[in-house]
Image 1 (cartoon, rainbow over the protein chains, first blue to last red):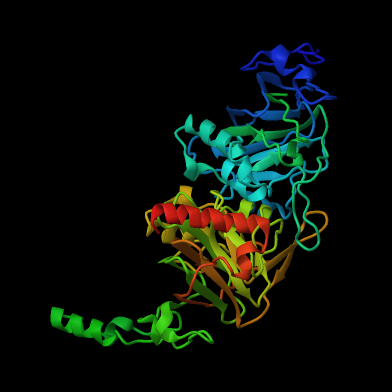
Image 2: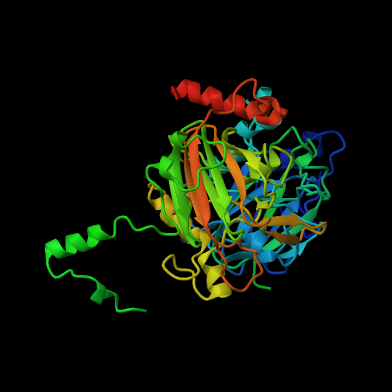
Length: 242
Length: 282
């Protein structure tokens, strides 16, 4: 199995990297691709987020975060906070209203609840990224799939656990981005999470326009195609300079 | 402007008191009506004695209330130029609040209409949209910010000519002990947005004067309403007309009601809501 990328880099991982990157750890036929940074600067952080887990880091103004969809069609639920004042945080409606579009693509400015640019998407290897589908959670799963799912872990739980490390709580969890998730809105307003349009090694990258605390939930959902019913790792690479 | 001070005799406490009291019966175009049963604009078919809230909210202004479970809230767009931005919170535990993503995702529908539940992030229904003759609403664009209104209109201050929705929300929220951290994505009524195939926003504007939407509180809720232009309203002039608000005692969605099991998702949301309220003794 491959535990270094084509440039020979070996990302850090909180669990055994060999096991995390072993396709046999996932559904039959799983293909993993480590990819690499979408920008050319120096790598200041390079992490593998194991399936189902949370991740966070401060991305300084001017640095770029590349997210690699290692196993393909793995939703990375994502929240952004102003690292200096977390009351200012990512805002779905401000991003949509200022940008004039519900889909996130190269050039989309990710706005805060105050309207300020927090980050700009500088590269994107799939047609469009989602920001209207929100996050799964124990409680919403009971509505969407039935009360039998109440024991399952969700992104809301990942967000709460990770946000707590920064002194934040349930008031601070707002609507989010979903990297590599596909949520079309049809002409009659029907919307939903459908089969993904990403694949192993596909990437997206955004440049921080302020110092941003990024919190990611590597979505553990097992009831819809947001991760192809097969949670796989994500790779997070922060670069700076060019 | 007339020399207003010259119209008032306020040189002593007694004169000042008489002057203040002389204005108590003034009627303004936008004001609350107390008792609510005295409203000049009772909603059709509603016994005025059942009313618990009656108010006309000026354009560029805000209002807020705690509503009992089973309260029916009617918002009416008097001139066709209102845009009612709305936030909801569980009045008992306000960290449970409107979750717009769940509100569109769980019913599999982005466009708000009668029957649509307004969901919290805790898998429960805060309120249900139970009547609507406008059809021009939005759950994707939120409200305006100070930054946006300063760019678009030159000013955003609540005391100025073009307040932003977020700043109006901030004042309403503060009166319930809530702050900026508590102001998340909101929904709005009376200005429509439709999504184009490429994801672009199509602003469909107003359905005209006299349209109304009614919400049913499914638990005790804090309601914050900011009446301000929709954030993608393309008009360069701040245009915000009066919003008429009435609320009255009714009954929450219950077993046997068509909405109770209109969809499996909303059915479980009502079950979760009742389960929570029963355990809490509400």
